[in-house]
Image (cartoon, rainbow, N blue to C red):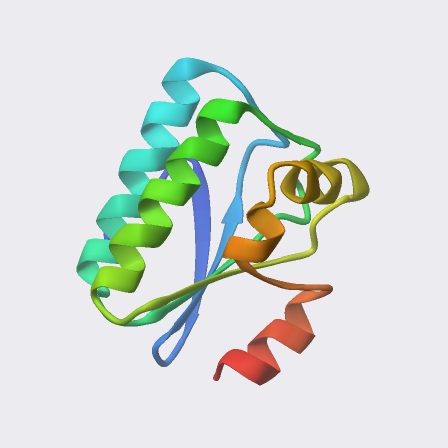
Length: 118
């Protein structure tokens, strides 16, 4: 597996739990690196299930939200699954305002997500 600087990955079979390293994802360089790392991971494990655990994330910029939408389409195009867990209230509110809570499968916590996604 490649070395990643923006994400940490814990894999159990075909379920890959991804945790963001940064708690505020706003810098354009970090966003670009994050997008590339996620796309690389998704390509390496095409058709598998990914859980983005956002427990550390306090803020996501609109550029990150856009990137997540693009990545979701990429994952779904290979019959994979992209889900989210542990959204902090501010991030959860942004997902609700932008209606991304209707697009993405969101779990309250990591354990619940892992149980359902495996």
